[in-house]
Length: 211
Image: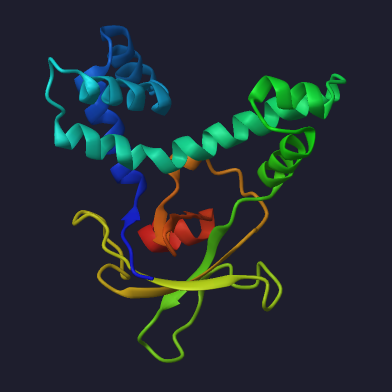
């Protein structure tokens, strides 16, 4: 499936735009001087509030910037939920108690959600140019056993200032549940693969962007 890619440059640009539009003076100063921006969820909420207001027309560029932040923000929310559920279980809370607190229909539903969150999220760990015959694989193609992955294609169209030998090419990718490389999600690229955003591993991102 063909789709665009959210690059770390786009994520940074989206964050900076929303800070300029909706950040407090303190947040703007902290972001500029200390490199600590507001949480993505806070910026997204402010765009939603502005868009829902009858006194303020929503700026399409603000909405687009908020949409850009959604994938990494969702990953962060899932990680936060998983960590809190783990703490709850470690402190003796039953699945019934947890289900009641988070609005799940049954203890089994709460446990199944926890198990889903515990799964390593799929990431693109290898890629190659799709229309060059036996083109070599890049990234870490031996990261998973044969057959333990999915494949897809997408058009790699980074920002004009990105100097990549793969810009403008259609790439074939492999993605699966690879070991975590500890790269922060806000630095990952997020290609659209089969209708969902999937992050890249550090090895893939370095080769794609020559960084």
